[in-house]
Length: 72
Image 1: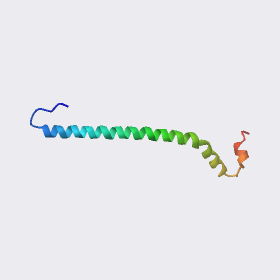
Image 2 (image 1 turned 90 degrees about the vertical axis):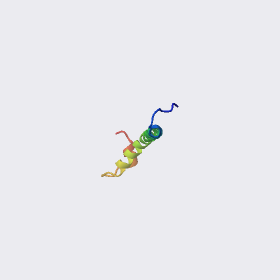
Image 3 (image 1 turned 180 degrees about the horizontal axis):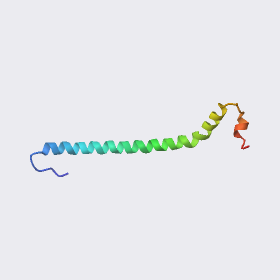
Image 4 (image 1 turned 180 degrees about the vertical axis):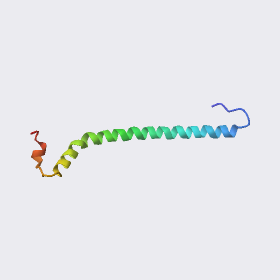
């Protein structure tokens, strides 16, 4: 890395450290967002039909499980 010339070398070094910290935080947020999206996709994929069945069983009139699962 090149050293800055001039009187403000300490300020420039501090700014470089801040940019590095921002890059690390940005990378962390991006990875966390990707991880969260993948988990949400799996939960939605495997949880949608059981959720519909549970909601259907808690409705009035109370249907039996066979009535909920039959297409008619």
